[in-house]
Image (cartoon, rainbow, N blue to C red):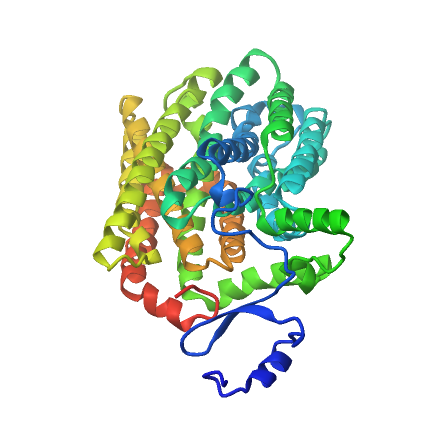
Length: 507
């Protein structure tokens, strides 16, 4: 017997390190390519319907995991922007004189989002998703309370950064939980909920933050979110179960070794015996390698970064527009209610995109002889590319000309819809296109996105002082057109060709 590659059977044993006396299971394509090698005593799923496999969990259990992870993902972004209405009071209490330091207290939290996922993601691959989520959330909780008792601006900035590191865990690990539980054609709705949390949080947070800062003190902004986070932490302890397949199989292997006394029972991951430094080195290098070498990742990461940057730019400058005597002269609490327009936009965009994303994917897959492609996620991205600049134009010029308060809110709502649709389409495309390396590709996008979320609010006050709301937002809209319009066209026409040329992408 000879394999298509030309190797004799005996040679195959040597090439793949298989014991000839014991043998192994191999998955081999017709062209002779060996796709999977597994020892006969490997601990793996008992079959495609193994009930321990998260993809086979009951629907309620799957969605329970999605909702709890989304709660983790929600509370951290809430805290990222909840202090926005209180910045002026904090600026006075801490005797801050320049706008950059003031905005830094807000946006440094998002800067931590750029670095946390780089090591929290690898930690979840070694120790499992749940334990890392819970411990990171506890870290966030401790330093969020520390922010509430800060006495100087320096303390506030340092504690905000550390709280952001802990709060970044759901952003790093949440996508992996969805990938663990759902098949590609089922992911649209789950990603819709998960993607909504980090975008809805910055809209909901300032609404509550405005009234808290107006009625009590800015310190209760931190205390209130810490109480809510504690409740979510307890919910996670009781209801969130491990979804990472290698971790589940390691637990199964340990039980088999204990019950049988046979130490040869091991999982594939245990046989590889990767250490934490090895996993960390790969995780720290691969996202930047993808960002440097993959045109698809570059295009989507830049677009996602810009969209995310605009989100935090608007979140940081909203209070100034609504409470300024030059414009709408509303109280801090009432001014915070205008964030409802962002929340409505996110909810509408999320629900519409969730339904259409999977529907469009299934129909295009059916037309393509039942073969799915990541490019089937791009049609809705074209809609987002239109909504974003339209929303910016309406918001900017209606605010500039002092139109009724509903007009800028309509623009903000359209922008929010474009934001959420773009984020969902980009995330599902990346997961589908870089299945094996999806975590690294998402980390690359997350890094660039968080840098933009940190940097945009720092220049926003100076941009609006120079260009005002009309031309300032028009500038952002023109850049959005330049970046957003070509993105879906590029992916639809050249995405498959780029993936075939890539050593990382699927297909």
